[in-house]
Length: 113
Length: 115
Image 1 (cartoon, rainbow over the protein chains, first blue to last red):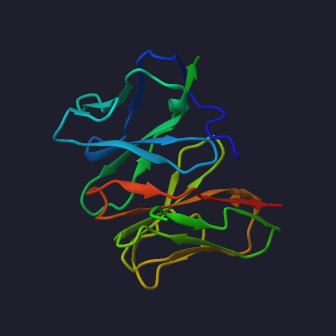
Image 2 (cartoon, each protein chain N blue to C red):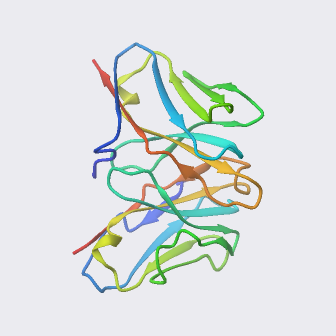
């Protein structure tokens, strides 16, 4: 399949370590955020979401942190596994009456065995 | 299957040819999106449907691009007189609720190559 993220920022982590992937979003009025994982040749896969009335949300092995003051979103992956290797995108949605999710530029995560 | 299905998976078109890309959303999903993803880039919004109504087509790059969802289920993205810059992966996503109320699930995409 095609390669995703040929020129994206890359984060390399050792298997078993924790990963932190960061995203700066664009609109201070955005109120819903999603993290997606995209493997080569596949569509983006939903990981976790968070609303602007929260600053932290936890899933299975993943945690999303939201800092509205600086328009920053992060995804923490605990005990990173080889299957976590992919490109990660944050997406934001702003405002009633808008109909799009705006995607960030993406970060490639490489898990080293 | 239970996911978003797109066909064809790959399409090679000669420049100037018309193409039609199909999206079968998850059954019962109200929202349907089309995105374009160039190599090494994040997905870029093209258009949005809520049931059969096309509420936002601001991302369509030119009048050669047309999308429809006549019965509020299956959607087709049509590109007329394809050009090389149209080469990309076209992603469809659907969501149970309105935008911002629930996560959007993506299909695997159609990779369009214009030669």
